[in-house]
Length: 197
Ligand code: TYD
Image (cartoon, rainbow, N blue to C red; front, top):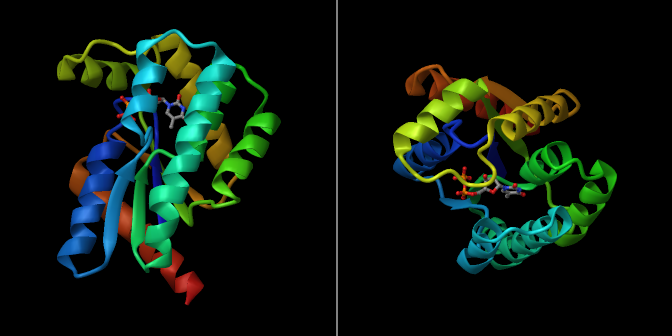
């Protein structure tokens, strides 16, 4: 089973996805946690240099292709639950809605690199931009090119629009407390598994 966590920078998806991973491990369920960008070298290339929107996109997509082949698929085949912090929805939201690139092309290219692999369920952690930016400021990292207010506003809207159109995407309010959020995540997973069995 492939579970993706998505959301804008500072939304809390990394904390929640790791929390879910720990929960499953404690219960003896075979699980792995992973994230995108996956390859350090590609991440650096994207974040440290000013790439054109399409070059940026192709780098993210190449990274995803490598991630899927090298890590995600082999683990799924061995019966692991794979939890990924970001997946294809990030490309649609950031490069599609954020950078204004054509969604249809992004989707087609994404399907090529993932060989059609889609998450079974995606948790979109939604948060007002102001709260997310405040959190990022507290973390004290220098701002990346993806963390500008106007840009993130478009990305957030994009995520929400994409989620409305897809029943496998669950929207969660990221400013609740972590226990309540974990409770909601587990409830949705339970409902999902019930439908499958
Ligand atoms: P990173 O510092 O790893 O951020 P985070 O911990 O918030 O995930 O950098 C990833 C950045 O790359 C993040 O700002 C979102 C962006 N991104 C895209 O624009 N498109 C994509 O397809 C992916 C996977 C990430």
